[in-house]
Length: 111
Image 1 (cartoon, rainbow, N blue to C red):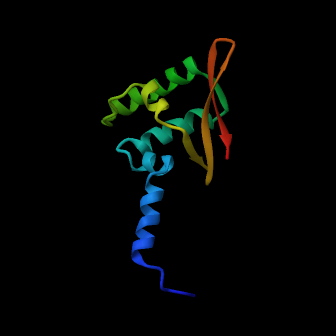
Image 2 (cartoon, rainbow, N blue to C red; image 1 turned 120 degrees about the vertical axis):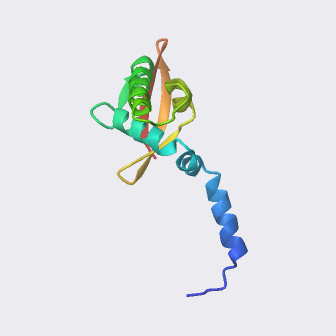
Image 3 (cartoon, one colour; image 1 turned 135 degrees about the vertical axis):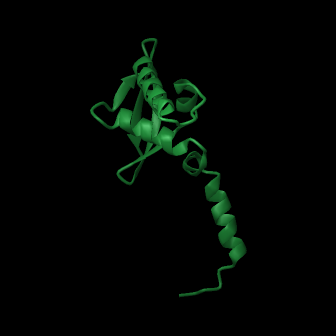
């Protein structure tokens, strides 16, 4: 195995990875909580939810976490808008929003 890969090259690779949406989300102050909420809402029984139902359920989870001492200052809509990638069972999924007859639905697509 060749061992002359420079530290500079490795550091550059990690800095590039750090700019990826998933890494940014995980590194965010509230990233783990938001990922946990999204996974619990879209992986239980329903893979697709109307936006109004999804926002309501996420807001309810946020309120429960806030009551337990978590500092989550944004609304459900703001957190959802900032998320595009979710991990579940070691697989990456994209959170998609689709407008269908004036209603927006959220669902996950395996990538």
